[in-house]
Image 1 (cartoon, rainbow, N blue to C red):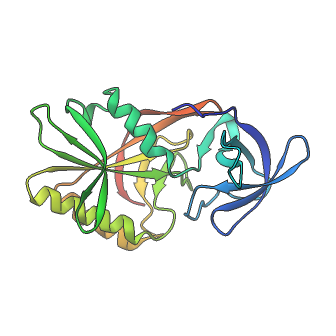
Image 2: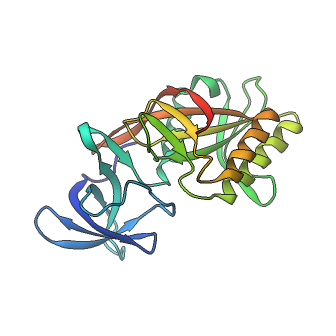
Image 3: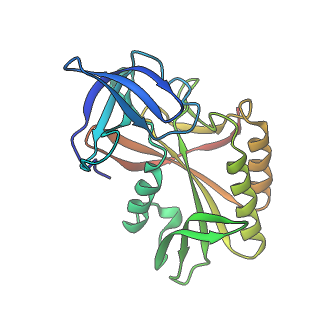
Length: 236
């Protein structure tokens, strides 16, 4: 996935109201930007962080700049836009770049299922069982090279796990795919201390036959693409 316009570097002044942030650009100008992330963003929204912004090609947009990346130590990056993993996974599925999910004839996004929900992707055809795929964005790192999910309580996430388990009970395949939007992690686990309810739902879903896989990403100011699989373990 390539960014539509070249990213602009700046420094974070503050994040507020979940979806807004004030930044100072390298030319000294200050701007209010859109933050496409409703989560806690633990460790990623400290004032002074180096951030990368994308300017919308739409001249009528109220906030022309959107916050895309945080620059980390050692030349690493973290993606903060929670809408991007679905685009990244969509491109990877089309290219057959996720071996665990390859071989289907079609990958349809946003298909209705469960209780008034939409699954991120429904893989079908190719002589394989229908596979329901939920995608979760991961950008929390607190210790070593561990990526963790979630970064705050997510009742919606627990509901998705239960709905995937229901699909398995109906004879389908169900997969939870965690996309790690940072380049300094090599392993994945649940942050059970931040959301014990999600950890319980995860354990129940796996016992019911829901598969859990995690992939890292390649991130630069030019774009983000899916990397390779990383090990998945239980709660921290």
